[in-house]
Amino acid sequence: MKRASPVLSLIVAAGMALAALPARAAEAPFEPGLMRLAEILGSLHFLRNLCGEKGDQWRAEMEKLLQSEKPDPERRARFIASFNRGYRSFDGVYTQCTDQAVAAISRYMSEGEQLSRDIASRYGN
Image (cartoon, rainbow, N blue to C red):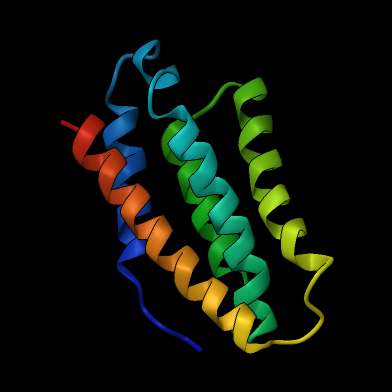
């Protein structure tokens, strides 16, 4: 199930583009998208490991997002809560990899890629 994805580079690019913005702007319109992205990373961390990928790739991507955003403690806590919500949303449902879990991975990979691309293009210039 190991698959290289443009999501990884887009996450970092989105975070780096946003880090260049003034602090007040970084709290504004793209915040829900970043929180959703954190939730998707949590979901992928659980699902990809469930379906055969071993390691912390998606947790590491979350850490990269946090490093690029440099959030204050309150905002950092919101990012982490979003990641954990994504993880827990599947942790209680799936105990083994199923066709539905594989389909969810595909949907989240696509959504994460689209979110990253939208955030970077809309707010990164």
